[in-house]
Image 1: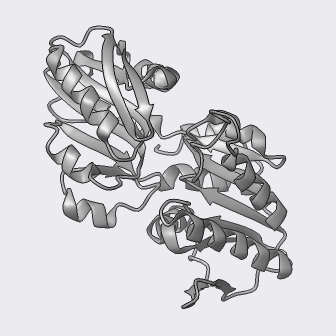
Image 2 (image 1 turned 90 degrees about the vertical axis):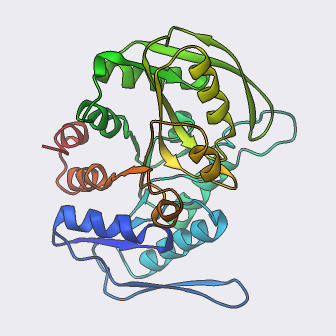
Image 3 (image 1 turned 135 degrees about the vertical axis):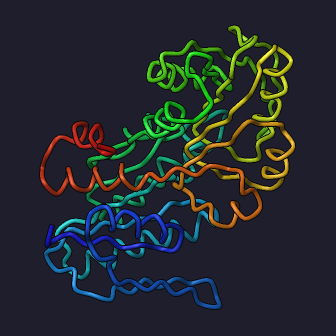
Length: 319
């Protein structure tokens, strides 16, 4: 992989370092500057001529700054004659604006795809997109990989927990496929929370489809933002007889009151990944478990560079 360079932009420095460790590569030299007027400059500290460049950058808060850093970095590489520019976007911002929910709304996740392509990206890799159809918004190779294997592995090896006692719970109808996939890995049954969302970031749990009485409930979602939806679901599961409740997600956005809500929810555990850097949040909530997606992303980069099967590489990522 002598022609491969991995650069870290502002939001994913820690993750990029872990990926480079997995690949036995040095982290590429790159400096990001933010000026007083809000403008951004990305300066590459080494030659990329003829190289295969990988930028690691989640577009979480501040979403627009992180997105602009990525676009500017792509442009810098194209103008410096990089062979390919590949965007590793573990958390894809604006993914919740994937359709027109009512008249005169934008489809911003498509706009972001257009911007990345126009800037010159040759490939995009994401993790657990909120809406899988976003892959179709790109006309370049796009791979969406999942962290469900990581989460399943965590529960299979957790001391004091028998997987036979687990019921996997989807927090809404839209997450049923995700819950079913995790349940298959754990050989567990599935339950679904029926909820209504009267306005953004507000949801009310209405009913439970399935049985959690006397069982350990494991709620799985792609993201946890303010945790309001999650907490209402936890309360329902306890009322329905769950002996313990775990909450899991790929993307721990954890905005506003999320940390306090999780602390007070009486969870047996909260598990997320480092698609979004959790260094500061772990100081507030040291009980949270953060799983690293670095082995998965490193496997993807290796498969791309060696023109090998990506599914095989991912299946062997933890061997």
